[in-house]
Image (cartoon, rainbow, N blue to C red; front, side, top):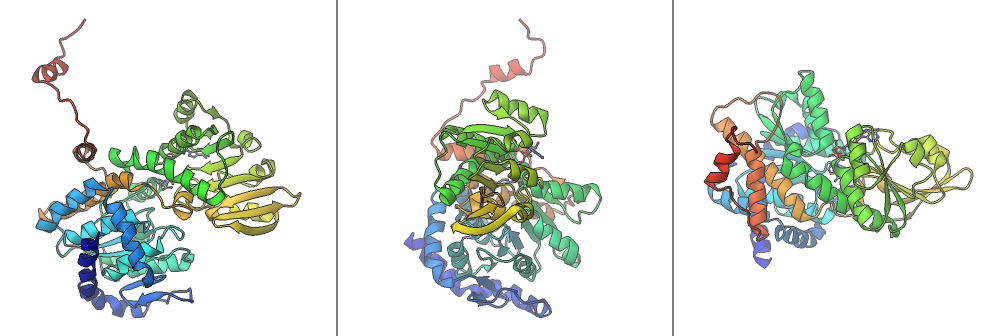
Length: 466
Ligand SMILES: NC(=O)c1ccc[n+]([C@@H]2O[C@H](COP(=O)([O-])OP(=O)(O)OC[C@H]3O[C@@H](n4cnc5c(N)ncnc54)[C@H](O)[C@@H]3O)[C@@H](O)[C@H]2O)c1
């Protein structure tokens, strides 16, 4: 731990490494509107803006904790530190600033990249981690509770260094590039990655209209990401967020999960494990069927509204819970979201029904409706696992971020080899999943059987029968 700090302390002095590409662009910043929020910030113009740089030390402790639980990414990082395959490459990232993200950023740095970063949600930045990264020489613009204009201001600041690659979670960075900084594409930007389901949907619709300007790997869709991070990571951390924000007992509650996909099924599994009775709402027949066979009740939201005690949306779709649902809910119902955007719960309609609204504890707002009924909204309808807790455990982010890291290596390798990737949403190869899973299993001390040559011949021989 001490060693890491010492090394990182040195990195602080090398801020110039980051500042030099920034300096060239600070001119460009001069014409850009200023940050909207006033108040106290720690800021070095053209380099970083965080809430409080004095939190850096505690941020380093958190990062060290994550590093000790991310063996796959750490082994890649160690290997790439020697060969520096990303030397001279500038990466702009827009992804929740958590301790695990810091490990990914350090991996990029160790591989030779110059990195700039912003959060991908106004309520998901860990201020201590953000401070540690700023002090270690990362160009970072991220603080918890930023306003929406400052959220986009921060994204734009990460583009000041004219990146070669973008790393996104929810497509806000890529959209900003396409809408305001398209001139960077080609001359500088040649590829990107996307971390989450909603971002991949946005990209596919952009690509379908022929409007995607550069190739983007759908990191979300890798098996070692989607089937683990979204299921087990979101499952555990969403319950963590709900419990931190409310401290309610889950046993005996009717827990309504909207969307029984990767995230929703993970949340359902964990809620059921804590003794809640799960109700799933769905639009997709096979997903609803799966929920039933896994022991949950399936209803429409109209049916579930009056039955549920706790509601959690996980669809990536807007207006899942709205006026008529709030009107049907029990007194004391708790409502939250774990989908990417805060669009799943129609908060304006809830506010319009309410005669009063107040925060009763961190991340828990009470709305008293006109008839006196109380409804509790968590984390302003933003992803409750990151806003009210710490996001996914490091162990699962290990695989997601190994995928991110390898996807960026892949983009750079293709560029160096003169391979032109199409301006499409690209899947990562299955070999990458198997590699990551193998290293992960090894780190857990688990062994696999291997096919014998005879077994291999058997499965490839079409003539075998009864
Ligand atoms: N909280 C987090 O940390 C976190 C992590 C990963 C993904 N996400 C986000 O969570 C959301 C879901 O991701 P996923 O990977 O589970 O997607 P998914 O496609 O696997 O699942 C979404 C499910 O919602 C269902 N659905 C769509 N519209 C619905 C409606 N009107 N009513 C009920 N169900 C509906 C779909 O049929 C699907 O089964 C996305 O916004 C994603 O970006 C959040």
